[in-house]
Image 1 (spheres, helix red, strand yellow):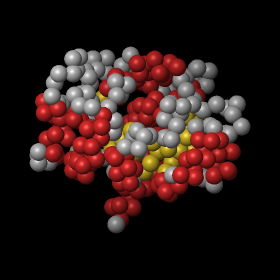
Image 2 (spheres, rainbow, N blue to C red):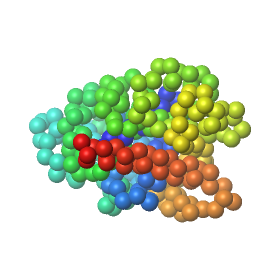
Image 3 (cartoon, rainbow, N blue to C red):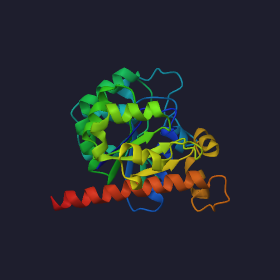
Length: 274
């Protein structure tokens, strides 16, 4: 099952931090194997958040695409016709063994070429991933990329990162209404002082309040992601009490994970019946 994370206010909603946090929280309590990937190349990627020895980008950029590892190397193997599901074990890295895996970036090609390759090989890549995992979480760039379109189209569930601003909310509900039927919502960078509370957003746009999770920005988690210690941060704060400065953030990612996986379980059950 594919679950895409997307936002029309990617930076303002801190969608990257939400994706990292929810991904970790999703395997803290639930017995799934989840594979993570991104449909864009950037130095700020999940490898940097998860691993102290992040080597997603080579130092001098000399390594050719044909020698690449990570997601680029896997796409090249698929393009050449090698579509054996066992390939994945050579290109993904365990974040939490037996539960959470990440297909890292190697940064050996430019973003436009990567987007083109991902778009044309996504069906085969997806089949390989589905043979090795229960759920696939894909962090989708908000820009008008070829691969973004096919990923959102084929996703079984779309996690929309909203932003508490009238213009951004109108933009999403006016221009991306086709996603709503298979969406759950995160309100990122959430402020309780904003008049656009989750309850207000639910009422204005006629979406179920139980499908919305507020996640405030958390500077401590942001720092942890820069230092490759996102896992350690979530582990040490997962059961923090209400007096903790990290409580609202942890509560938000735990609620989001619960909503997402409840929806996923229903979809999986329906698929088995079908």
